Image 1 (cartoon, one colour):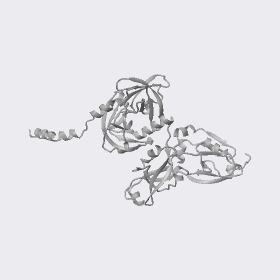
Image 2 (cartoon, one colour):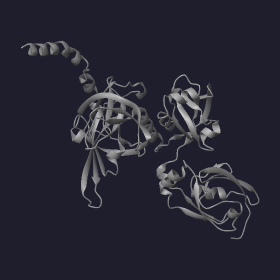
Image 3 (cartoon, helix red, strand yellow):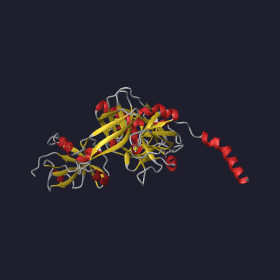
Image 4 (cartoon, helix red, strand yellow):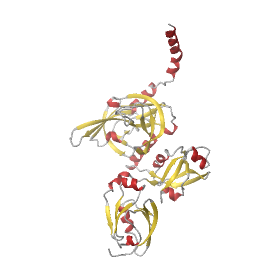
Length: 434
């Protein structure tokens, strides 16, 4: 009897505290459920030629009918059907997409549309409550809640993106749906789960909404997406490194590599500089910086604060254009013989760039003819030509374009990489019989 009384007493005392820890989601969900849509993507299987559907989620961002979802939900779709919460259905057009970040922009012709409010992911706090609405396994308007587990989470399989990690229950069909904060603002697009079984296992990942909207705006205005590029590699600042660099606390992005002739190189950044603010925003760690740079428009001048030898310094650089890996992949079989120099060159594959540790440009010298011009001036098989007379070599075509502008009788500086070491060669452009 005493045991039963004690158990009852404890439950009576603590149950109000436990229940008060959980917020009421009902008002927020009621206000936002009409902004969330179900997406059915009609696919054609190859080679069986049989039809099947992919189910996903999305959310409305304008009264003009623009809808956002994941690209993998509508990839190669023959028809895209959008179903609203009031059961109206529309055939959607695919306005544009970005494979790299996995975002697609759709459009429907409809009236009386409810539109989401856009939040600010930077203001999220670890442990903050968030809510997902979507169509897991086709079950429309399913609501799940959880907390923010981490911000700016980088995944090994997603080097171009960072995620908001939460423990909100997400399953197949939630892809492309919104992640709300308690104010009813969308702070992310649900995109991935970590799973060994195919279902939810406690780890959910959403693309920060500021990045999603940035891409959507580019698609609407330009019809394509471009990314900013700085030309550096960075690492986190540990406590020991903070002491070595005369910092009071460890934060920022420590520059460990600068690509020659990159925007960072031309602006005067140095190895050992620690980037602590970028475009007015504090950089807590190296993980945060790449996505900040990529969201900048090409050609935009950006102010960066660094710590150099213990002193704060401001540098302004002009944002460059990040090369598209898909473009690089299409060049992998391109080879060309350059008769003027007596060499054979080929574009670098993604694997080549990994092996040779080459970032964004360069062509591989796969053959050098004996006694040719290139041979006489020291160019060797296996060299990677990065730059000619101050101009970057992005591929075989750009190499040819530059070679065709060279004047016979002049000396030209070739920047090459040989066995991991970069050096300049001076080659005098003269005609030699080959």
